[in-house]
Length: 115
Image (tube, rainbow, N blue to C red; front, side):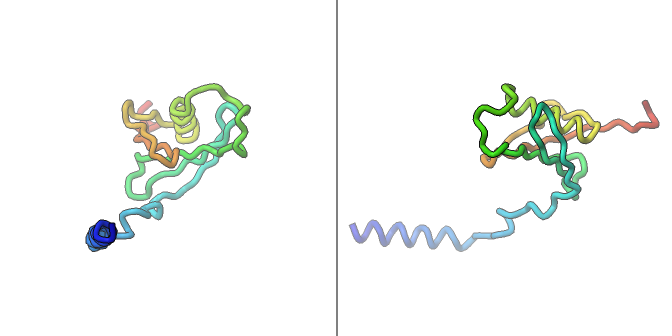
């Protein structure tokens, strides 16, 4: 049993040799926060400073109210909140959510002088 524990510790230490803390915390590139409300829920919309067509949307947890509005999928809410706050359309199939319940999407904006 002690040999297995020692082996686990050694393998864990070997995996930490290539650890780069900058890969985990890349939120420094997000800025220009905008607060918007869609169907009674508040959303924080941010642009990526390196790629302005990349958007991040975070929903307020509404104090973990299980009976709060609305009864609609969060992906639809996120899409509409992004479109409402940016004035751009979300690129189809670009919306995804990570394990922290943060939505990311690419947007396509038209030039107002063209339309």
